Amino acid sequence: PVMVTETERVTVTRERFTRETFAKVWEVMADAQSWLRAATLLGIMTGLRGEDVAGLKFSDVVDDFLLVEPKKNRGKVKIAIPLALRMEVMGTSLKEVIADCRRTGVVSQYMVHQTVHTGRSAPGRPISLNTITNTFKGFVNQALGEGDHRPTFHELRSLCKRLYIEQGGVDTKALLGHTTDSTAALYANNRGAEFQKVRIG
Image (cartoon, rainbow, N blue to C red; front, side, top):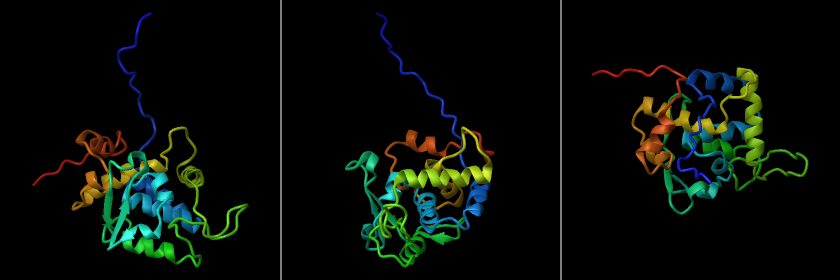
């Protein structure tokens, strides 16, 4: 029998967030659950994957750094994100976002946590990844209209990188835990979602 010798290439059709489309989503999230807004801010400011955002604990903050070992490559990559990290577009710093996570009136070890009784989930319990991504998807559809290729929570990683590149002064390769330039370049690629600015001077 003939053997397959070349890996099939997969074309990603999921849309990227642009600054404008995310702004629309953030606007409709004004009255969203506090945990969803917290998860979204942590996602766009740190570039962490959804599963890592969901698992963040207040004890992960050590000496003004947020220490993270991404679950996808645990043991191979360790990231120390300074709390002083600031995203100008969002008008806040990582330190301020984490401080807001503490102000829910509920004692919890998790940054993204339940604030009211919901089914079997008691206040203080962590919010599951599925709950975060599905609830986020609802607001994306509300803001941008339903579609098969709408950006997901994971697309906050790419938007995070592109916003910091535009802002300047942030090592986005280290922030997103990329070990190669080729992987880092994938997240910098906006897949035609916005115009590529020509920088001069």
